[in-house]
Image (cartoon, rainbow over all chains, first blue to last red; front, side, top):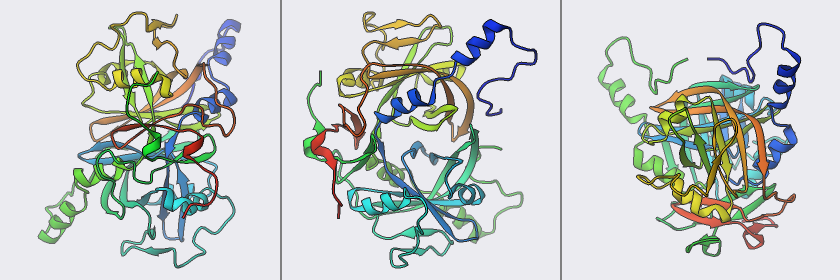
Length: 197
Length: 197
């Protein structure tokens, strides 16, 4: 299976097909508008393939299966951290809440040394960088990769985790959400208890 | 590339390696606790492979690339809609806000006819089912699939979209978030403007 977005025709397209091929792909601006209104949880992913640690902030982390414990995320071809994540066997996914907002911003800022504050992180015995004090982190082994338009979708198997701030059933905790280029906090006031029309 | 979570050894494991192989996978309960505190945007995905439409609510929809316009989502092996989505060439991803909460609940409820209210949806000329009145929807062609522990990660190319309720830059709109088995609404009050400690 390949990741070619549009099958390449083996014979030249007729004019009507050419128009259809052009029309049959949404423009980048319209696509961004769809996702601008789509909120996401916030994670920072670290990896070290032997040349030092990298980190990036991602809103694409999702659970795929609990047994086996598998998650996915995607990495953009344009991120400086991507080559290292692609070369690594393991990653650490940090699940952030509002107390971790500085780290979320750090992982989303280009051109800064994300490991300059040596008090903020340490290395696991297995070599990966872990930031201190985050809500939770999980060390994962990369088990599969899928190309998608230059970016890569990564599936990873959860190996070991640390939960520093657990959330009781139904409780908002101090959840952090990224939405429309803005950070939001979930709390009792944001909760929808009744029907919404 | 395969989706085997743990490589199978070609020679029998020594006792110490056996213990390590067992320990090196996070338990399902710990894994669920990680994601219980991880909020997500809400989408309903429909597909029709020729045997009638199916629909399911997903919080795994993420943007992978804007040019080409690609998104991903995962479907669980346990969902009744999954076989149809796996057999389909195209899907419609509906991006929901709080006004679409009834649809979010419908797509998440087992054992109900999600198309019983024939006023609530119609068929596109291309055959897919689209629910009326949602914040936005996008018709996509499936371009790649990746196995992950029985579930499947799907990459799709956005073909055409309709945005009924656009969100101005930085504005919360009426965003809907699913978190810790509860629905939440983003608004001006949930917004974090200053540093959070």
